[in-house]
Image (tube, rainbow, N blue to C red; front, top):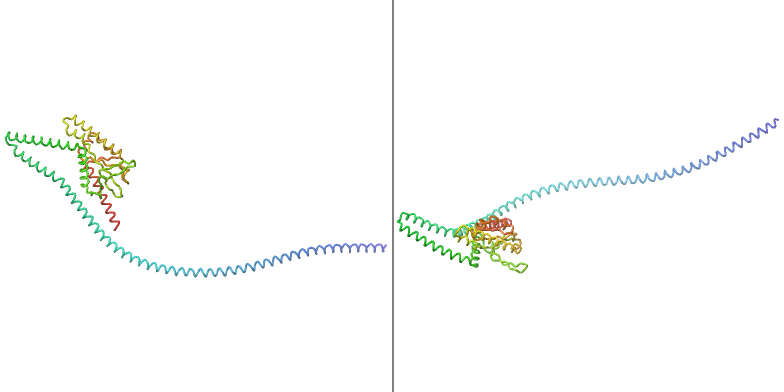
Length: 374
């Protein structure tokens, strides 16, 4: 019994030892496995540490290089700032010297230019004044040429009126003789007027009279032939037709105004020889119709297409104020109707005023050119 108990205890003890050994062996295996895992983790940590150390070394080197480069750049920037400051000081000094020199030169040049301009302007203005004086003298001479015959006629008429006033108290016989003398003189004048009318009824004489009156008006406006105007200029149209206006007035800028003289004498002759108001009205109607026809004929020629840069109108010159006023008396709309057809009606007075304005434009253009040359 004791033996079985001891044997049982021995067996139990052996089993306990075996179980303990197995458990220890299992624990040793687990510890070995964990140790291997920890060794692997330790190796990985060491590798990471070495890699981190290498990266830190590289970053330290880059940081040192960056600090060195930054220090060098800061030094360069400082040197550049100092150089720029020095250059700015030099530029400011040079600018001040240049400004002083320029002001000195500009003042001297302006002084010299002012003196030269005043000298040249004095010469130019003196020349213009002399030309204006010459033009004034020529116009005065021309006007005197026109006025002198009228003055002589007025003087003669005044003498006759004085003679009539002094002889008013004469006898009836003497008065009758004088009246008869006046009647005889009137008859002679009527005959001479008839002769003049007959002469003007000839187309060539009528046209020549219109041209001479036109030229006289142009000269009175202060214009010179071949320079300010041209006469009988021949132009050929695209269809081969020849156009020859009586006058072409030159304008600044190579432009020109075309003037053509028209003498509608037939209707006016009826007015002048009318013996009643009815005949006079018929004459006025015929005269206005003839003027209107001349306007249409002149408009159809379209002179402005044949002369470069010419305004799109033509001037129709009536060589007598009576022609002009009689036409407007009958037809007050004639000026407007003619303008719609690009025709400007002009009497001697109107044309002289128009050409006087053109002459003034020429003078202003010459003054402007002289000032520009100066």
